[in-house]
Each structure stands twice: as C-alpha cells, then as structure tokens.
Amino acid sequence: MTAVPYQKPGVPETHGLSAARCREAAWAVTPGGEPYGCRYRGAGAMNAALAAALGTRLPLLLYSLPGVRQVQDAAYSWVARNRGRFPGDTPYCRQQPEECR
Image 1 (cartoon, helix red, strand yellow):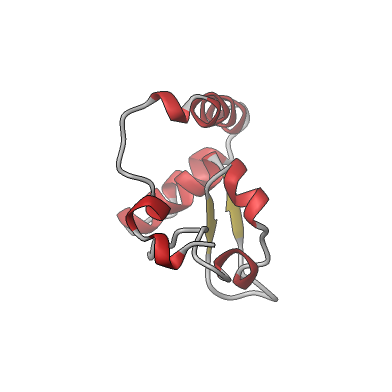
Image 2 (cartoon, rainbow, N blue to C red):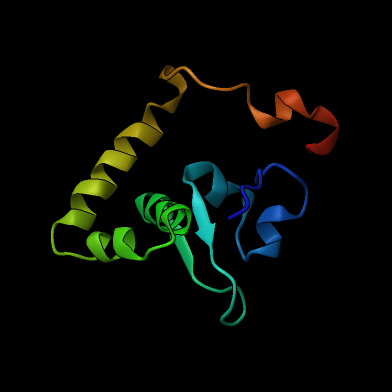
C-alpha cells in the first residue's frame, strides 16, 4: 500500500479521478483491471486500506454486509465534513509547496 497526496500534479488523473473528487473523500485504488483497477471511495477506501494493512479481505467483506456500509458511510461523511476541526498533521502542500499546484 502506498499513500499518495492527490495535490501532487498528475496523481488524480493517473487513477481516473479529478482533484475535486479527491477533495471530497479519500480514495483507494487497487492494481489490475481496466483501466484503473478497483476504486473505493470514503469508508470503502478506509476498509480497503485496512484490508491491505492486515493482509485480509475481511474489512471489505464486513463493509459489504447489509447495514454496515450505510453506517460506515454516514460516519465517514460526518468526519469528512468536520475534518478541519480535528487535530492532525500539517497538510501536504504546506509541507511540500514546490510539489503542489
């Protein structure tokens, strides 16, 4: 698994996404498939990342259960709407301004 900042020029387009879509939610893109592999958005991306980190598809299987997806998507949406209120790391473009548009 490789985390890549969407603000870096060309990154969203490489995976068939736009910068606007990347600002809205996190994305996970798996290799393979045409043309971009499997793409997961929001809570699905978090489950895909957890699955990759753990080396098991269990998080994605749980996410596919009735009701689980809706609860996780709602929680992700709330966090995404309020992300500026949470403490965190310095944004990538503030750390690496020469690599951002």
